[in-house]
Image (cartoon, rainbow, N blue to C red; front, top):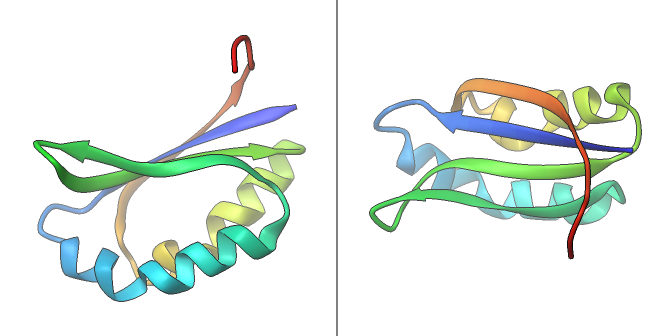
Length: 88
């Protein structure tokens, strides 16, 4: 089962994202549950994250809570929703 984490950055928080990016990427790679991930963009600027996690809702919630971005207070909102893979 897959879950989509749709994470919106707080306005003006680009420096927080940049300061924690290496830790976030290392965490995502080491987690073993990330199926697909990348930043959301507006006019080329990073403004959020989309992370597809494989596992249970609890796995997705745990990933979201322990993400270095979340711990740094980057996100204005995080939505976790079940996602069905159809293509790719």
